[in-house]
Length: 299
Image 1: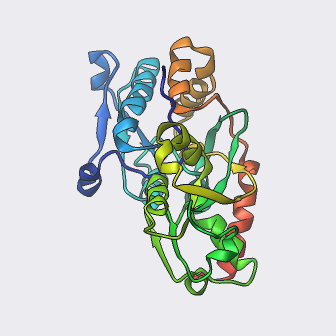
Image 2 (image 1 turned 135 degrees about the vertical axis):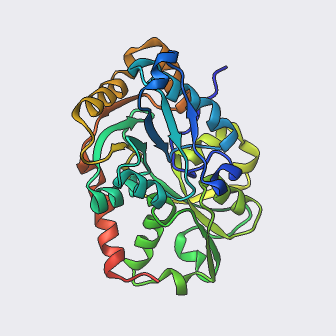
C-alpha cells in the first residue's frame, strides 16, 4: 500500500544535523551532461517527519530534474523566515511555502505565486486547537492560564490564527497563557500535547489528519476542541524577477503533474490531488488576520 504524505507545514528541515550545519541536500537525477548546467535551487517548507520526507521529496526533485533537464538542489533551513530571505534575495528559484510564510514573503520581497495544491478536493486547510485527551477544556477560552505550544512565528495555523482569535477578543497571548513555547514542528506540537508537556497547541489540520492514519496512537492521546475557518493551502512561489523561461517551465510542470502517470504516483505520496494556477486572493483572510494582530502589538 502506498503511504500518503501530508502537504502541510511542519518544519523546514530534513535532519537536525543538516539544520545546525546550514547544509543543503543536492540531487541530480538528469543525465551527466546536466551536471555542467546551473542547478535549480528549490526550498521545501512543507513536510512531515524528516526521515519520511527525504524519500518522497527526493522523488519530486528527481522528477523536476528529469523533466527540465537540469540538476536540482533542495535547500533546507530551520525557520520559515530563513527560507523567505533566501527566496527574496535570489538564492532560490522556487520554494514550497506555508501559507503565512507566503504572505510575509509577498509583502517583504514581492515573491510571485506559481501554483497551489488541491488537497482532498480543496485548495484550503485549517488550524486545529488540540488538547490532551484527558483535558476537560472544550474551547480555546478554557486554556486561560495554561501552557500552550505554537509552531513557527510565521505559521498561519500554528501561530497567527490562535493569536488573532485572542486579540480580536481583547486578549494578549503573553497574559492569557501561563506559558508559551515554539516547537518549530506541528508533529512536535502534537507530541507535546499527547505527552502532557503542554495543555494545548495550534496545529496544521493536514498534519493532524495525516498522523491519524500513520501514528494513531499519538493522535489518540489528543482531541480537537476548535477548528478555524479555511485558509489558502501552502503554495509554490518563485522570486520576483525569475527569468520567464524558468518560471514558465516550472509552472507547466506542476500544473501538468496530474496528467503524467509517473507524477501522479508522487502526488499520491504527497497527499496532493493536483496543482492549480495560483490565486493570490486565497490568502486575503490571512492578510486580514495579520493586520489585526499587528495593530494589537502582540507581545
